[in-house]
Length: 358
Image (cartoon, rainbow, N blue to C red; front, side, top):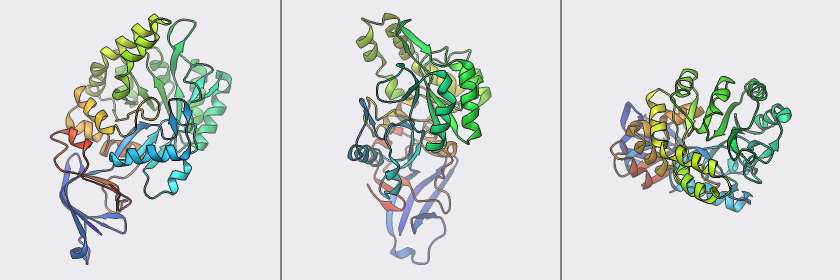
């Protein structure tokens, strides 16, 4: 039995003084044997959410189970107890049987156009097969499907949309019929409106948002996961590709230069914004605190940035927070994260399924 005392941040507008963990579950009713509980003090948040992460993937493709385990443990120790795995070629279902590892919501494997994505990551197909592959990954995943919406086209030397509109409309309709939501990797401007108009539920990165497309996102309630810690790598990527693809390199630098303005404009317009790191490709795991700090640099208020990795993110993904009877997945900090989100980088205690694991 645990007794959490201090400030329990149940929601952005609800704070309690204490909670108990009994049988691995949250309760606000003082138990009969409360005096026997182990007491932990501090500021308590629901377990953090990384809404764009890749367990089972590295820069070269799928990894073995020990590497996947190390990735998941790194996220857990950083306070990330819920991951939306935005595409992985590895089978990580075995993680679900581990009480000490974060919970994962999977999007199956990426679906990309032939030779239009990172090698060894995705199913690489042509438009006539898109509906079938979306149906396949909808059945394999946990309610999400991941498309690659744009990528560099070597014939033009710049970012280009990957899918004809009709194919995307049919594929998204099929995913929805099967009860799955659809998200897409998108860097560029031109890929966004057709995907939103086709009914997509979320866009990853969304660096191409403009004053023309932001209102469309807001009107349709399409979420974005900006992955700003990943967008920070754009200048290095541009430097590496400039010799062969100068148009693409210049485009990537422009997208990077306005990244904070883009995210703030989307937030101000009412577009749902969630925290994701894109860990598992070129980036290390355990960076969720850095991503939340980046959201505040983009202009999100501290409570909104916290919500993007806690209350709001869990609600969006259909997972409980610190509600009565919920699994006790929580993180304890030594100071108030609403005052300074950088405290997320130093969790005092990590509790998963009612057990102190870090």
